[in-house]
Length: 103
Image 1 (cartoon, rainbow, N blue to C red):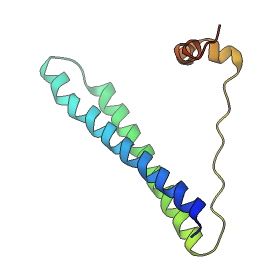
Image 2: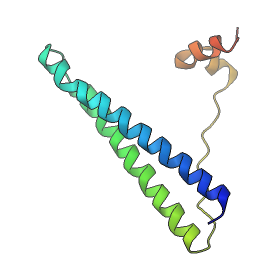
Image 3: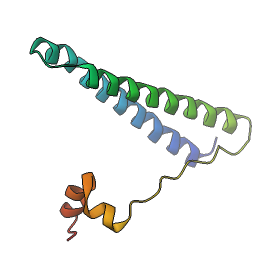
């Protein structure tokens, strides 16, 4: 395996480990929310979705390693559409856009 692929896999491993940690942290708050009388249905659903995405990422990583080990090129990465300038100026990205000096 070439060093570029190893670097990419190490970055993927770090991201997966961070995601696991973050999901565990959110999951650990669910009992506390329930104790204080808050509904946890939505949070539990979101944690479940995050776990499904994490499983998908792990499967993608395994596929990449298998292809690299077999001497095949890795599968193409899906590209997310970049938000338009208008979308950046509104919605959840607004705070980030403003911090970066946007107007």
